[in-house]
Length: 287
Image 1 (cartoon, one colour):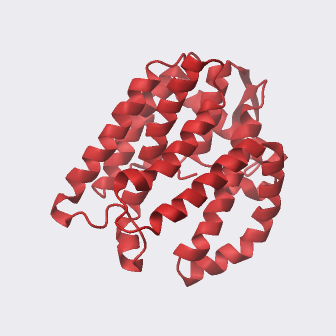
Image 2 (cartoon, rainbow, N blue to C red):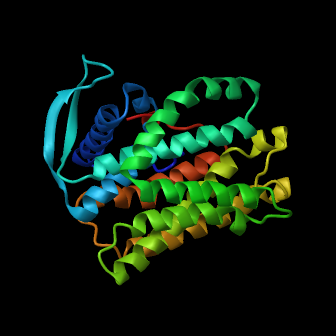
């Protein structure tokens, strides 16, 4: 997971912010239970978004429980109570994604990063096998995406559309798994595709300077510097617009105010921070 699917806290109602935190903390607890305390360190906003979306589509959130933060027992937390496998599935996808990110880092990162990856990869290999056994369909989709991504990024003159397609297709298929009929499958697939495309491209925009320095692949590398911000904005805005159009067709009841906030305020705010190299607001740095 990349960590770009954020809320705009200043535009949320207090009860919505508390509900979002409750899902975030609930997923954190589940990752520790299903895999290891250390996997909680990889908890992301993207994983929280996925868990919350699953809970909303199935209406499986049945309230909130009070408790203590496992990482900081002095801190009180609220945990969203879930009656299906939304947390388990989000935890598995998070672990699988992090594992393949570590594998990718072994070829694309600098010496010290590769050294760290080699130290933690055996642990994640064990947790990855556990997650893959529980949700083989998620494992296959992420594996296929990484394989396709490697082929695309080693090709000659790979454009933005081709580069973003594997990630976009993966998220489209992940969300399609939740569809109950053909109409939902098409809507979920459309939403997932354009959101996945946005995630890949905003990550590429975020890593552009680093990739240029290391001579790594990046779909925005060949764009003239004087046109880069305008081009990135245009492409990313198109992704968000298409994703929002599909979102409008989805039956989202629980957490709808939070999803509206993310699509209309949170994602564009994060996009502006990345594209224009703005300083991030303190309130949006952590839950």
